[in-house]
Length: 170
Figure 1 (cartoon, rainbow, N blue to C red):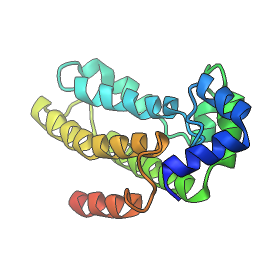
Figure 2 (cartoon, rainbow, N blue to C red; figure 1 turned 180 degrees about the vertical axis):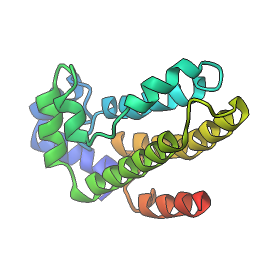
Figure 3 (cartoon, one colour; figure 1 turned 135 degrees about the vertical axis):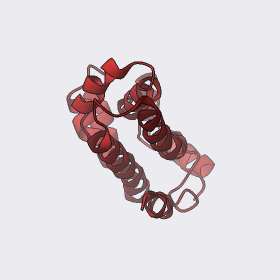
């Protein structure tokens, strides 16, 4: 079933719920909110600024991976309970796809964080941070596509992308 057909089915079956989700900034077709990606965007921003602002290393070291549910449970997102509920009701294949991308981004960020040191030369820091950003940004774009109903887990193939990134890291 295409996303257009899913959207029509969702709207026909529960127009009020779809409107409620859309109003809460949750995609009514997928059941996901892009707010989750802010967790990763924050870490990417820190990595991008780190070579010029070494003081941000402490902020990056404090970054911790969070699942979709954990992110919303700890957030001030107005419709956080609805976001968690919609995520639980989402298509399991799409949810797995999004979770795989999040796990991969978290692994890259944790490995990068664990490799950084305060006494690391600026050029080394820039290279490591730049490589991590180069790996994470395509995953963020793919995760955004899944959240917005533009990817389906099969065409996005998060696991293949994750495997490819990990091969490059070795």
